[in-house]
Amino acid sequence: MQGVPAVSDVWRDVRARLRQEYGDVIYVSEIARLRVAEDSNGSIQIICANDFGRAWVEDNLGARLRALWTTFDTGPRDIVICCEGVPAARAGVREDRRVPASAAAPVRPAASAALAPAREALASSASSAALGGPERASRSDGRFTFNTFMVGSANAMASTAAKAIAGASAPPFNPAFFHGGYGVGKTHLLNAIAHSVSLGESGRKVLYLTAEEFLNGFQSALRARDVQPFKDQVRTCDVLLIDDVHFIAGKPSTESEFLHTIAALIAENRQVVLASHCAPAELGVGDERLRSLLRGGFACELFGPDLDLRRKIVDCKVAQARAHCPDLDVPEQVRDFLAARVTSSARELEGVLNNVIVRTAYMERPVTIEAVEEVLGDLPVKAEKRVTVDEIQKAVAAYFSITSSDINSKRRTQSVVRPRHIAMYLAKTMTTRSLPDIGRRFGGRDHSTVIHAVTKITAQLGADPLLAEDIEAIRKRLRG
Image (cartoon, rainbow, N blue to C red; front, side):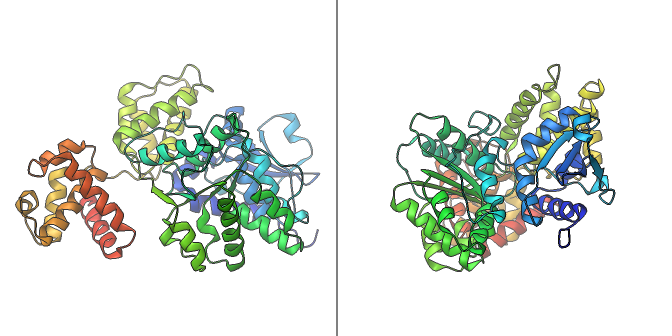
């Protein structure tokens, strides 16, 4: 059909978007063996090497892949994730040879496939006047729940706030805005809220969307010149969760609809939960009313996991992997090694662990530290250099042209207090030392002093770009 993009072109766009969002490790370790094909009915088939791979891709990539495919294709298609060599999957299939194996997309632990009914209605609205059909309740499949969300100092406040939202009969704060880098758990938290609310006895209706799906649904409704069904869909839920809201910034008409949607829900005492990789003040939205509304809610940052949290994540992922590999045995020293070496994000940590499991347990080899080192050598994993509190103090002192003795002294002049607070902040975020231990290493100070310093610097980072530049410059020196 003229005007319909080739499967290879759509797949290229889908994989480019996923790789941009979720990094090289998942791209290399999980998706490189996928193939794309089109059957005689025009359905798209994503072909996996085995049934384990098919189940993993369906659980982790299915909803996101389908939403993105709808975005880049001109019309609705069925997306089937199937297994290599299964006759039902091969029937009528003609492979698109223009897509090399290495062109596959990286995996994001996306919203649960069980949330798909609510999400795909927006993504597929290009073929209808607007969002139609009966109201749908969002559900989760048990993968992204509070039970599987590992909590540490990097995300404790966010976890507490999310549980408060899920358990409250009325919004405790509105809107709630979770922000942080890629792979720190924002999507997991939003899905956990959706899962908890949908299983509760309150009968509240919950709808989970990405901002891209909100954007596509609204634009499709505009093209159809009938936006009321779209508004009815998103404004009648009791809990609306929208992920990646930074995608809406800079699109005036969508910003306006987004503003009115949030305002309408808040006015009716319905809960709004948002997530983005940047804080509300950094979104870059053009509508001052929207900026004010977002800043007026509760904003909570999630940070990259420290060593203790990474160790918890490894334990959780190993337990989940045993559902597919019951005899899996990952020794304690291997888990410690993984947690210490892969420091960038929980997502990359999971990607490395999955690759280790496939190369060992599935090949009937023992899971050893040597096997982990082999995987780390093959993948572009970012592993931060481990630093000490003493090294942080020296780096901060050199940067501000003072001495380490000044930082540890009782002096309270601004020229010393600010560097001291920055050093405490870096010690908290770059080492695994406890707050009391950090305090002792700063001239025998109490842990409450460290908390005050970390809280103050964290609050100032969003409003003081020069401070952010100073801290990032010191981080780079410490990392070598």
